[in-house]
Image (cartoon, rainbow, N blue to C red; front, side, top):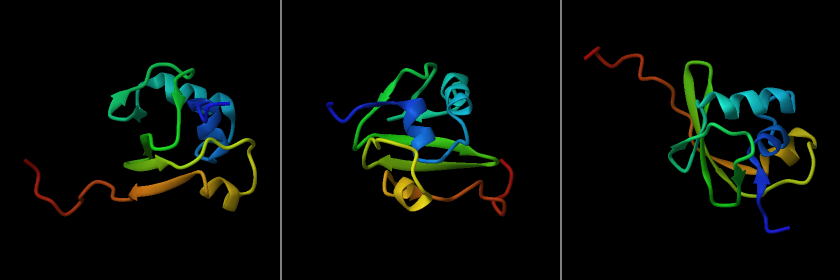
Length: 97
């Protein structure tokens, strides 16, 4: 294995989605970005060093992939698969343009 994994499996292993089917739909929706490029396929692959932006309600989470993962394990194991780069949501105090 070369350290690459399908994005839907990785999102599920990292516990961003409860089921792999939900992760597939999210990847195919075009809302997730991989290294700045909008995804449209759940078969896209991720590798350590890749940057993902994932919508989380009204916020967008940016994470760096640290490892591909081999299974959907407990939360601490899943947390070791990525590093959060930002956790900021919309700036609710900023004036409207």
